[in-house]
Amino acid sequence: MTQDLALMPAGDLVALYRTGHASPVEHLRAVLAQVAALNPVLNAFCWLDEDSALRDARASEARWKAGAPASALDGVTATVKDLSVTRGWPTRRASRAIPAEGPWLEDSPSVARMREAGAVLIGKTTVPEFGAAYVTKSELCGISRNPWNPAMTPGGSSGGSAASVAAGMGTIALASDAAGSIRAPASMSGVFGLKTSFGRVADYPSSYLGTLAVIGPITRTVREAALCMDVISQPDARDSYALPPPGHSFLDDIEGGVKGLRIAYSPTLGFAKVDPEVAAIVAAGVKALEAMGAIVEIVDHVMDDPSAMLGTLMAPGLANAFRIFGFTEAQQALMLPRLVETAARGAAVPMMAYLAAREAREKLGARMRAFHERYDLLVTPVGAIPGCDADADAPRDPRYAAFANPLPFGAAFNLTKQPAASVPVGVTASGLPVGMQVVGPLYADALVLRACLAIEQALPMPAPDLAALRHSPFAEAIPRGLLSQREAMAVPA
Image 1 (cartoon, rainbow, N blue to C red):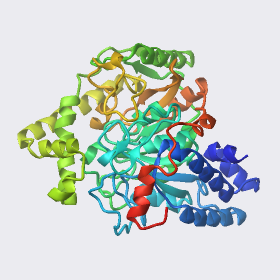
Image 2: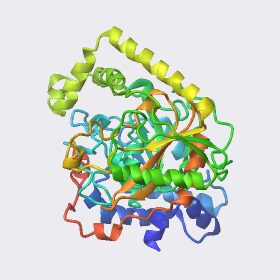
Image 3: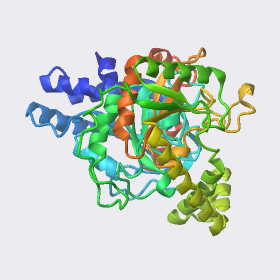
Image 4: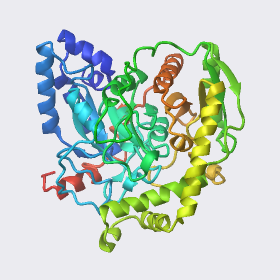
């Protein structure tokens, strides 16, 4: 039953806790067994704290025995992406320029809410340096790999988050998304990921990318994401952009289905080039929506390519990070040259160009508000291709040499602040999962979850072959990222 407890949905776990047929300590031990067996291959963690997790699991076990759980997630394991500050744990953002010593004195709002709910936090998950890539690898933490095929990336920047969830190394992952960083790894790793409406989940310190970035969950099931949203959508005074509490549970209408919903299906948004196999898998997902009673209309052109606008806004955001951290030349020498060059380019963006990009962003937001007066939801592919090599900065497959952007669909909805999710809809002939993006009107996160649950129920996904990972040629005794963090903190490996 060990692996079953590691891979069991949160709702089933707490049902066992309630009846005494399993305990949070047993669940944690099952998850840590998965970490011990699979993290040497996947390198999904840059920090583990087994002692702290065990203390929290024992406290949760006592609450369940007393019939007084803190929430519907009490005793469920969770991880934190290494861009969110966490009390007592380093938040190095995969950068050698950030020392591990700290002090690390506070939790970001989503982490604080999960602690209050009794979730058992087990560690920090890997990212590319400063989250600025769609492949999760860095000089500090090494290469993270995909549970479906460890030669491939789990995606980025929440690659460790998605890989850990797909492999049963934690039930819920707190992740972030400024240009697709939840949805792309969820798609590539065959799990569910929700980019929330801006402001729906409080965040602090504010992202150096400003209002592009949000916090959201990555989970194996849609219902688990809804459970997590009930917890992390509570307000926090530290975030001046945070919305009021939603006033309802995200589970309230989650079984409502898609019958009668007006759904726009855009295969390219009007500008993207898409791998034919990916397009066919997503199109089959759209057929499933129609079979469930949705009213689907193909919309070829939703918008022009927003990538130039995004670049004009994001590069200054990275330059802002360098300002916030006050990186010296010596520290910058420890960073990826590409990152330093992007920050320098961002610092040189003229103010008028930046303001023009902001104005264009506002117009795009207004365009999508008008769009959703006609359509309840928009669906698209998540990625243009099914995946990328784990150790490469760009796809090596010659079929994708002409693809200007492997992930053209995600960032637009960071610009518009809308909720958008990746829900698995199939697997390629080569065994890589494919996600469909479901986009809702601003603040309609619950509707996105409802539609995604219907898709999940109509198109159940197979699981990756986790047993095969134990014999992978990519295994390391201790992944480099985890070892380097422990050494930096002078903790014996």
